[in-house]
Image 1 (tube, rainbow, N blue to C red):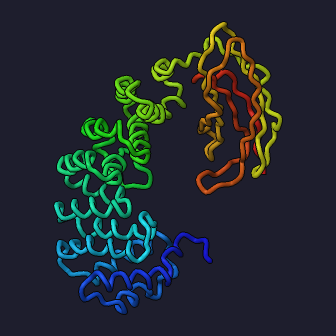
Image 2 (image 1 turned 45 degrees about the vertical axis):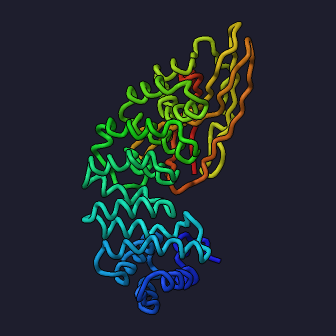
Length: 367
């Protein structure tokens, strides 16, 4: 069996799919659909290409009139479920793509379709072009969705409107001014579903990257409402915590005044790409009171231009007892990955206690 994601769009998948379509779409032409899918260049298409290709073929076999075509989805999706397809299968991202590609001129019909389809497969990417074109109309709808009975629709309200949603179309107005998003986030701060709460936390973290004071104000207002809301704002402030923002450190009582670093040692001052950086250190809580300690380290990765890019890694966060000593040993892997290119030469490593860098040392990365 292939391990390539693109091969989710397999012959078996399409054969099952057309059987469901034949049961739920009047006049559906099964042989035409398959012939259009398996054109000569199909094997060369990657995952996203196959997804968009499937949406395009679906458009060619559905009624030409988009409102008439999209009205079939409430019949199609129950049949897919009845035939054993599971919710949130990645293969079905072609359905939101169909709405995004062919429904942008039909705001009201597409809003209904997005609300329905997202309960089968997430529409967080498909909603972005509608936010760009319809602005306040779409924001009002997403605020209404934040009160929806389905947690998947409530999640769409938050996830689809994130200012920095990864891999998604940008919505510059929301990045510049997130104030219109606050009402829907307020509606979701006590959401009973963890999937929605995580989205709210990620949404706050997005806002914090451009408007830290706004997120700090929200965190101060929401703190103590419930353990779940406390978890949302803590996760939503994670970038500010990694940056050592003084106000967020104060909010969480993370003082470094009585914390001391000892014996910081890099055991592997020369590291070969593919191997581990090994380091250790000791921390002392030098006071007669227990205190919360957030322990982190930062790697300053050397970039191609010789400058450094800093990435912070969390080790732990817990209460240290009065006069407690803690010994820490860690490995940092330098195994090649698709999301980072390693460049040889001098790199740096620092230890961070409650947001304050206590010491920086250098090490050499070689091939």
